Amino acid sequence: MPSTPIACTACFPSATPPAVRLPGGITSALKKRNAGTATTEGSIPRYRWTEYLDRKPKVQENLARLAGEPGASLLEEFPLKRHSEQHIQIIDAIANDQEMHLQLNVPNRGAIEGIPDDVLVEIPAVVNGRGIQNVPVGRLPPLILNNVLLPRLARMENLHAAFLRGDRRPLLLSLMEDPRTRTFEQARDLVDTILAQPWNKEADEHYRMKEHPS
Image (cartoon, rainbow, N blue to C red; front, side, top):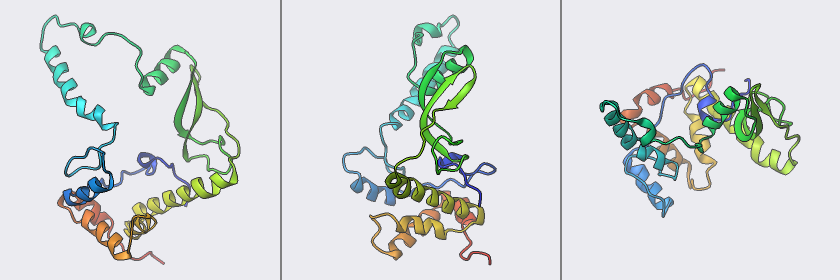
């Protein structure tokens, strides 16, 4: 099977995998496992980046209010200043040929030896009017390549195959690798419980195949 990007949203270039949501009972267990991390019932654990999403409705409400006020000044409400988001810097670097050195998720394209070219990797990159150019990394120490990156590539290929075949067994095997999994039955029941939720009907129907075709 050809290699595919590591990033979950790029693993399926020609199709989008069915989204899977967690039921509240499972997130209750996650709360105990992630003590000190704020969570909401029926959602995955909330990490710091979700603070941005929490503020989004208020920002949208404010924008709607300003749009309905004749003569309102967006610049007064949102003064011009350099933004910390990298996509803004990327646009600026390419559009205005302002060279920047950033850490980006890009197709490997030979940057790291031993990793397929079409796999997404997070590496240093130079961005300017000519686009995005990878900074060569070279060959990583065997300890890192063999024990960290290549196992991740294997999991990526297995989950990609699961999606293409509609086979839920690789989903189960990925849970079996988790050190928090105690038994096969625990992992199996977790997969079945998540996919049995009403809002995961599409994913449950997709991951139906139990046997590989021979």
